[in-house]
Length: 500
Ligand SMILES: [Zn+2]
Image (cartoon, rainbow, N blue to C red):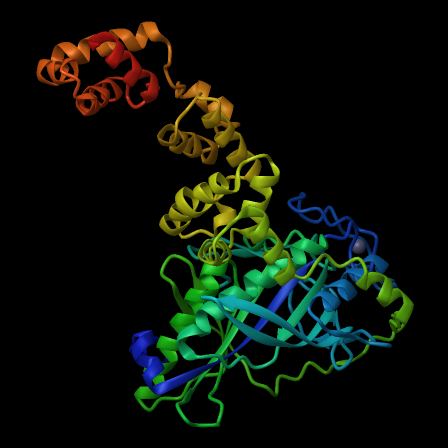
């Protein structure tokens, strides 16, 4: 039996026999204007190899210089994660060969990270779980390989490969947790909540775009199982570069099922990296790994050590936004949300989206309705995170304003969302192009009301006799004829007027 054909054990059943043990690594790409050790720009999506120089291409004789802004961002991230900040630390060379890494080593930090011993408190189903942070260290990103030919985009079967070094040298912060042991049935949800928490926290610092879909926040999920009651850790798998919150949870659940299947059959879990597949929700084998991987770390001789003064660290501490728990409590009070509303909002990853929609002028109730109703539904249906649907808080606010002004109703708003997501322009553009505007003009409505009355004499008679409840049938007929675009309130008034 190979590890990839193991029988999967349903998660609930697996958790009756095993406890999951997790570790999470998050890479954050900083949004500095220039790279970590040179002056090259960092913009996303430029023509390949147009943002490079002798330093990030590692040409002989080039000397790196540390980007001060990246150090500042690293310290602020460390502080936000309740870490201690090193008095003195160095960069180290992590030696390995990879075609998209021109130096053949990555400038990283090893035993001297800039930040260490922190924690993050995350909430799942109203319970708070403390995740201990081992370290947050600075390093540089690699370039990108593109494998051309073949059906999978992987190197196997490709005709040739291209390398783009624009990303090589972009500053990264790697945040590593200590071992996470939480109740098994919460493990996958805690992993998701932690990544979401870190995204919100670092987004709030303004030091990264924290876009999982663009790779500026990437998460690795390390997971092993140990038999219930055992103190011996099992062998872990590392699922790399999972690119949405949803996928973090799904990857953790899949690995619980897969490990349990192997262990139940008396097999051995391989220590390896794995790839997560969005379409199937499964992982597949990457490369085998061992703790003995020898990267021959040694201190980087070309860079001066970093020793941030205590005064500077304290200055940076003052720039931190209010802590997440304080902010949540403040927003809940401002918005008048119940505990359950708030929990659902956070659980959906929609806290910032709701906040920004309200800032754009929408009432809290309306903002909640769209994000936790329509948008959450689309997010589930499409298997995308709610912030990756292609609708912004400003657009939601604009759509709600169109409703408030009587131009569209809630039902028509759904077509407006379809149009916005399809790239048809602003909500107003979509209303015009798709002819969605509600008809409230008495002429057009009056004709439709007359036809409805003629078509249902029984209902008309009842209304004449004072049974106004019968108006529903006639309103329904008018709405049907006008494809939902009639102003229902005005239609009711016209019916009553005509039959009074
Ligand atoms: Zn450069």
